Structures are given as structure tokens and as C-alpha cells.
Image (cartoon, rainbow, N blue to C red; front, side, top):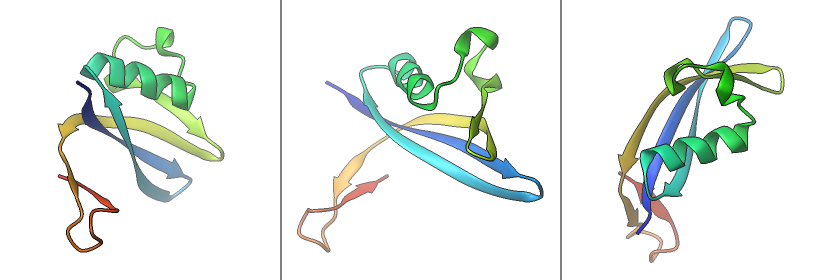
Length: 86
């Protein structure tokens, strides 16, 4: 059974900062990180650990912040058509 993981990262462009999040379904934390690295085209062989990951998103530079397992719940206000991440 797959779990849901939230991967957060910090984006920076000059003096401007923002945060990004990706929600991935995977059996393990390692599989979620591997899927995320492939999606973001991170060359993971360059880094000793995932905490050191850095990559480019267009003109923004991004840096890994954290990964955590989360729960999903159907939204009660929209008759279950939306998903809430807890």
C-alpha cells in the first residue's frame, strides 16, 4: 500500500524567496525521494544525502527542506471531490 509523502523545498530568485511542495505516493520514503529526484531532474550522484539537494526550476534555484509522511482526507465541503493533506 502506498503512503503519501510531502516534500518541501525553498525557492530563491535574487532577493525573492518562496516555498514549493510536492505530494508523492510511494511505498517508502526512499522511493518518494527517488521519484522526486527524477521528476525535478536532480543529479543525485553529486550529493552525499538528499538534505544537500539543489536544482534549478527555470530562473529559480531550489533547495531541499524536508520530507514527511502525511495523511489524505476527502474534503467534506465539496462532497469529497477535493483532497486535504494533513
